[in-house]
Image 1 (cartoon, one colour):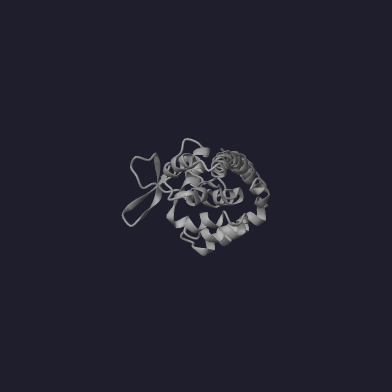
Image 2 (cartoon, helix red, strand yellow):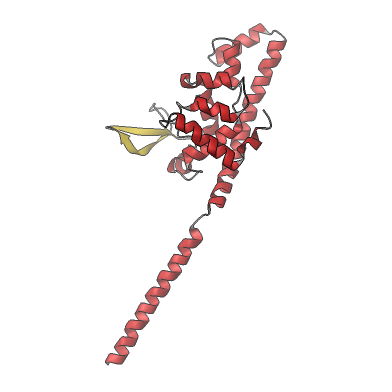
Length: 224
């Protein structure tokens, strides 16, 4: 092969390489999901599940109110026992569902808009930890000292939402939050009482407020 032909061959190889690189880069760009599309997909997944669980809890709450109005003491006592409450007031605090806007914002924050590994592999949209070997669960990629961090794994998104609402309703750390949700329907006031949900403390409520306001999630609270 003479020098001219060798140069042409080298140029052809370089051109082919550049074409493949550019084509590959274009393919990669096509796979990049825009923020709007990511949010739209997240909403498609999480909103029906939150609506479902919210309606379940509201139905039970309305039944409790009817029993209270009719002074059905025996039926109320059964519900108090079933939901591990001390009295009727605590029962109502536990059952009454907090605003959907808060649930949506927490799911967005805890699951990185549904893109986290725990959301994708375990339907865990709220960063709920597991402390029992009996749970279906998935390990985190980090540890606390020598201990593995485990997060719960759910069979559906609705189960994830249901367990999240139960966690908030029954957790001692959220007692004041549950008391306040019967006094105010304003999610921006209520998020202040979720400081114990995250290691971020008071900053957590501030971040939830920003997500709720920026995305107009209060519009989902019309059923309250």
